[in-house]
Structure formats: C-alpha cells, structure tokens
Amino acid sequence: MFWVAVTTLILITTGIMATMNLPFNWVFYICVLGQILLVYMVFRVLTDNYVTNRTFRDLYEDHPMKSEIN
Image (cartoon, rainbow, N blue to C red):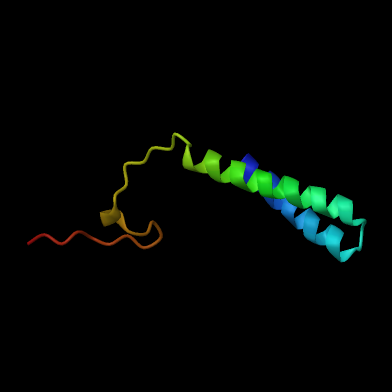
C-alpha cells in the first residue's frame, strides 16, 4: 500500500501544480515521475506474494452466499 499512496500523492500534486500555473518543466518532470511510479506500482501489486484461501464461490466478503447443496 505504500507505493499506492506515494503514486497517488505524486499524481495529485501534479494536478495541483498545473492548476497553480507553476513552471511547465516542474509539472512535466513530476508528471513523468508519476507515470513511472504508476508502472512500478502496478508491477509491485501484480507480483506481490499475496495468498488467499477464498474462491469465486465465496463471492463478495460483505455479502456471503450460502452454497446450494443438491
């Protein structure tokens, strides 16, 4: 979750900097940094060693459904 938070803050900062009309080169470099962090964040999330014992039969955690026995 650390990389998700860092990437989100960098990209929100880019939007704020563009709105405040800061110099283009600052906004551009922060935007490029944000895009690099976005790719890295996706890589880290997809290669994480997260293991679960849930299956598609469990459906949603907030509304579990009982298995039908025939």
